[in-house]
Image 1 (cartoon, rainbow, N blue to C red):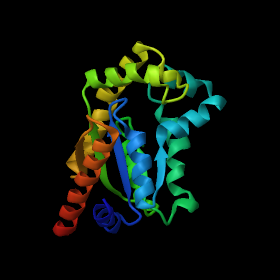
Image 2 (tube, rainbow, N blue to C red):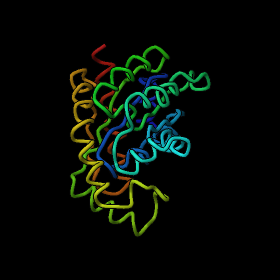
Image 3 (spheres, rainbow, N blue to C red):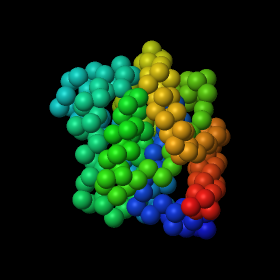
Image 4 (cartoon, one colour):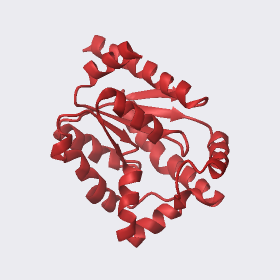
Length: 211
């Protein structure tokens, strides 16, 4: 693992890696671990917005119903985190920052202007059936805390619908820019994370060879 991580660190510098995937694909789990190993900082749009929901009933209602937060609030609440002075010297691991079609251009621009250019976009691939199975399992393990958006099946359906309709076009934008790193996200957390590191290492090496 050490050699792979060193290759990724050298290539990444203070750049950013954004992680996308269907609900329950493991975005935050992978992102937190990756940030730790790379000596970076982890930013999750979901965590940032959930921290703001106590002060904003509209955000709370949207998230509780499995909807993406409106774009103006994303831009005013989440985007400024990329410019924080205390993050300037670190690489950033982003968990689904900019999920709604159109937001990706703001993220790309802000990241570039703050010294954290988007270097790769990981896609954690699971099926809708697997997302449902993981949702069912989480109700027994309670490993995600008391999240309102995890309580009802219809909310999970809404989250999957939002992903398919609003986030897939975001992923397609990154695909056109040659930034996508697809990863099979089935299996144990350890296996998935190892798949992520392998895929990133190969992407980094290919990027360096092509520059």
